[in-house]
Amino acid sequence: GDSVTQMEGPVTLSEEAFLTINCTYTATGYPSLFWYVQYPGEGLQLLLKATKADDKGSNKGFEATYRKETTSFHLEKGSVQVSDSAVYFCALNTGANSKLTFGKGITLSVRP
Amino acid sequence: DTGVSQDPRHKITKRGQNVTFRCDPISEHNRLYWYRQTLGQGPEFLTYFQNEAQLEKSRLLSDRFSAERPKGSFSTLEIQRTEQGDSAMYLCASSNPGQGAEQYFGPGTRLTVT
Figure 1 (tube, rainbow over the protein chains, first blue to last red):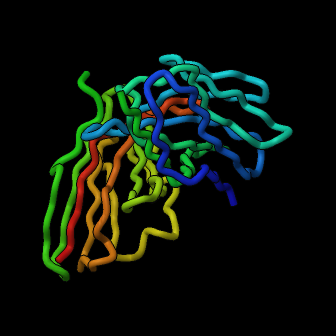
Figure 2 (figure 1 turned 90 degrees about the vertical axis):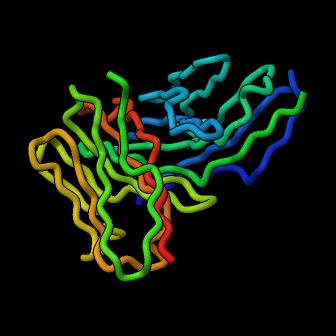
């Protein structure tokens, strides 16, 4: 079945540091890939997505590229801010039902 | 539209009791999903509706769980004879059809079974 593997956390960075959060997947068919973010006390919200190979999703300074050859969708940001502190989930869906399969999530803490 | 809403936000119940949660999706969305999230894990799919039809149920959804979406608008998720293992955050999401369509999530209902 489909699965998503995220790097182990938590991750703690200083403000303005470079961020990479790794995500790899296993899927039957051709998935769409997503990064969702959950800020403290808030619900899950979509951060970015990519629907086919080599697509790059971007939002709020975050980027991720759909790499079919390595089955990866790593999240990057060049300069993190304290306000980026949150839990980040990588997810995919395939097929007509479009149900999401999530990774375990990783907690990012950014210190001033 | 203010987004997906869920009620209640928190529920504490004793083992063996029945509980019911409600989800109001974004009005123009015809798909509605239920997920369950336990501490330290990502959300896991439970079931989904296209309009009023329940099209798929996960193996996680035991016979004690039932979901409805009677008029293709709001949905309810009922858990009968709750067990401590049912303690989790129950999330609802809605979307339009399509593999790449964004699912919009509600704030969740946190269930604690004592």
